[in-house]
Amino acid sequence: MKICAACQTENDDTRVICTECGDRLPASQPSAAAALSMAAAAVLAPPKAAPTYKKKPIPRRAPNAPRRVLRVLFNLIFLAIVAAFIFAVQLAWQAPDGIRPPVEKKPPGSDTILAFFKKSSATPGGAWMASEESINSFLMENVRPAPLNAPFGIQIKCRRCFVELKEGRMDFVMEQSIGDYPLYFSLNLVPYSKGGELKVRFSGASLGRLPIPEQLTPFLLGLWRPCFDSLAEILNTLDSASSASVTPKSLLVRWPGKGES
Image (cartoon, rainbow, N blue to C red; front, side, top):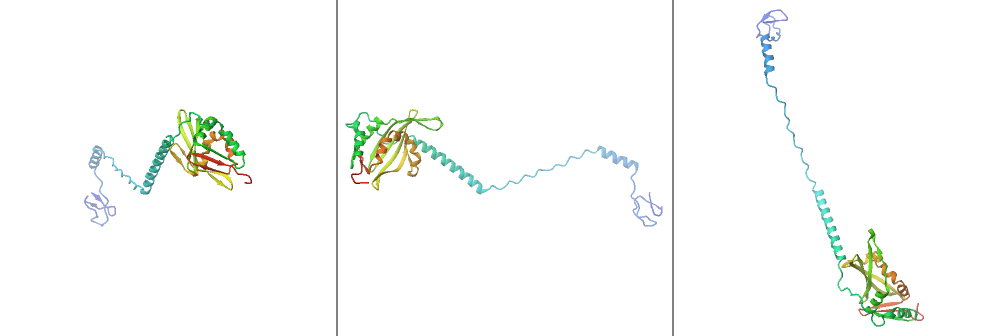
């Protein structure tokens, strides 16, 4: 039974409004048996499974197309540089075509070539001419360059120096060796006259079969230092010459005559 709190009238448990005063009745309390039954059901009920949460996948960012292109381009450039370096080293280690064999015997008069050279330079209007064979014979007999110490403790030995006469140009070649392997350094010299004085222009160089641009030649002159140091006396004498001409057969050097500057 529900008892109205306002008028103390008893009402049926199913009533919500008091039949006497119309006031709202309180909610009915469960009986002891019903409460015990509800408690037992709660104890005996299987535990509820813990809620599971599905992990949402992290959205992947779209690839940066310009960055991928730059990475591929950088890799291609790097591979091209490595390939060019390997190819250049192979060319530098290859002997050029037409290397002159060492002179085995002196041609006639080669032992007096230096004396005649000095006499011509001291005579006003003097001229000195020599063939390629005579020049190379003189170089073989008189040039004894010291070894050149390279970086990392590598010692480069100079085997010989020789020239190749061409039309209007003389190639000064130095044969060096690292261990037993020969290396050839060629310096292209073009003589010309300016203001009555003999000048020489470097028209390029090569290491083995690797050509070197004319602009880089001055930076490599140290490679020819062993031979140039042995020829210092002749090179100093050439400073007073007025002109020189080169043909495949001979080298002709002239000094100024009387009354010339």
